[in-house]
Length: 471
Image 1 (tube, rainbow, N blue to C red):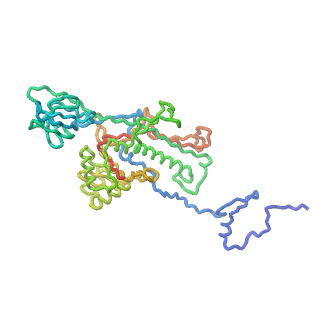
Image 2: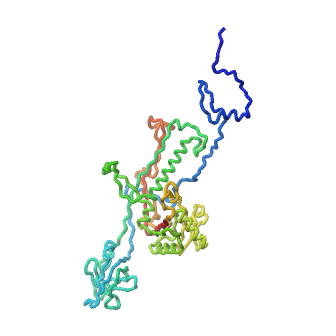
Image 3: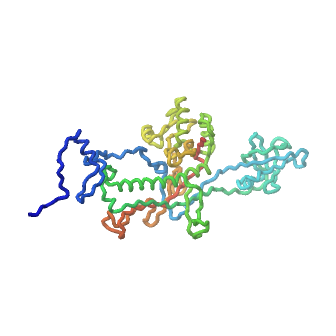
């Protein structure tokens, strides 16, 4: 009679005396497999208790919102977009006056500083003009001798005496009876131009990973790749925001290889000039040094804004250091929401301003809506070690001007994006691959999420913006 043997059969008892069932089951690190081998199971045969909630240890990491809140959007059909802005209709200049005591023409020689040669100071100055300097002296322009030299006479005396470099304003003119008309003046304009910038991002997942279920629940369910896609989209939006906030001034940088040789003279990477360089290079700026901001600093800012026709209502996006300094300053004076603060941008609703995280105060008829700007303190971006942006503050006009031709309101800033014939490159998103998709696009066992945008920043009237800088 044959004997049947089974190598897997054991003559050991199936139940043994142990301290507790938990100790026995959880310590079964070596789990037997049907092929006789063993594998490690760190948790034994107990079911793991994994909380499905994903903890957001850094909160909402998105930094977008500034441009979306304050700016409009408009399509463009060229990667270079332009506009023109009017200049002052009045002129001033800086000049020196030489002493002409004993001169036969009773006039002194005035020399306009060469630095003002391109500032229309001399081209706007004509014989017969009345000019006044900072000291209140009024001169009559009698004759032009060279491009930058004029004979002028102090009104009320025959000799002005020497006068060091001083600023002059043209306040009018005066002519003798029977004289001809002066030469006409042509208005000057400011020319603004900027480029759109192509921004791209990609996320890829294999078909196998796309079908793996996780303990952790994401916004799209228990599929981890949905978390990856959502993070990629948020990061792409942040890149679009960063380009329009921080983009350096550049008229198009040629792509070069590692040896420095030009790859293709026609292949250029265009960058858009962002909001911060726009204010710092073209607008008003106040360097606070390392000291905390004072009410005198705010008074100086208000005076400067008023001088250059700043908006009566400003959004102040401040780094954390500057924001805290302003809080301390205003709290000590009880100035928050005081002095008749208005909330025109928020439909005159104070609660709306508070819900959006703004604290408002007024000074000299100007209302500032302050908000701490996360970008300036982000530890992986401008808040990284060695960066000083946590002491920066951008004052952005919150009113709108009106286009003289179309009557449309023009905001202080806006986003321009490429579009034509129904095709828009403001925000493109498409899927490729053979995984997950019902309609396959290729034979690769992956799902690829593609993002692309071609956009740029456009700012208007930089004289109405102001930048605080604290080191």
